[in-house]
Image (cartoon, rainbow, N blue to C red; front, side):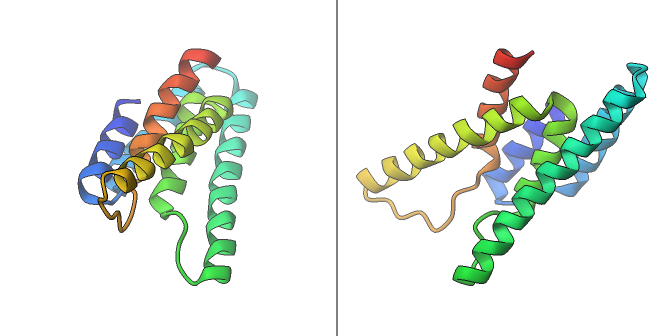
Length: 138
């Protein structure tokens, strides 16, 4: 979780979700799942993680084909995949639901303050949503 938080903070500052942070987070999450001693649960977690990655990627691909620009960064997709491995699919779903609303409020606040946002870095909002999801689903 600490590495996911670090990646989200990095995204907030630079606009990039770094693979150099997500890769060890992924490996550590996999090791944790394996050490629990339930290979079926570990395989299910990997399956959910790949599904989450695919859903975000496909969503962005459809958006790109329609509007010729990305809706999401692939860093958000990879961050989500690691979040699913680390916390499970339900907290990650809450991260997306709550994170989306928080990002909308952020955009609305910028609009009210007449500050133009060229892009919104989404991982920090996902992180807040993930923490809420963990509280309710763990």
